[in-house]
Length: 190
Image (tube, rainbow, N blue to C red; front, side):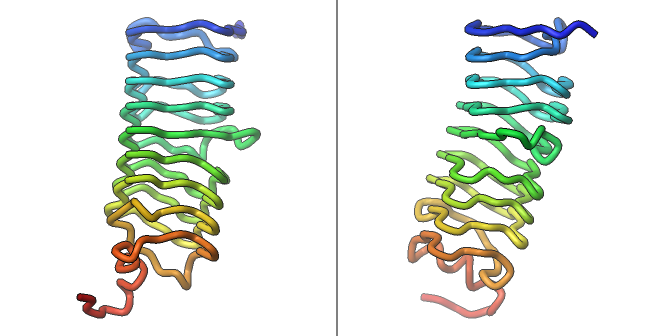
């Protein structure tokens, strides 16, 4: 299979299901209003790339390298980030729908999640140390043996997890968010 190297290119309004992109390494590229839904991105390498207003729902990420990749206003439903290449994995999300995604056992320290939906996401055994969760909705998200040390969840909401089963040392929460940490005690807070 032929392998390509593409740098400093902008892809706009492309439907990669009707005309597939070539496997290879994409560096400093921008993908604007592109459709990757269900597309097989296995073994692709993205370095210093921006995905804006794209649909990546149900894309295959087996061995995909995502190094310093930004996602803005993207629909990203049902992705398995644990299948990505672990080397240099570095992501940021702004105004994204990440519902039903799995970050199981993924190490993504100091990741920014801003104004994003994380409904029913799997964060078990994930290392999110120092991450920023600004105005994110965590309805029915799963946290089990998750490392959230020094993470900032002060403006986020609808999270619920057991502090005894997760590492939260020096994590930041709002006083209203504390309710999500006390759910197992079945107490009433006014």
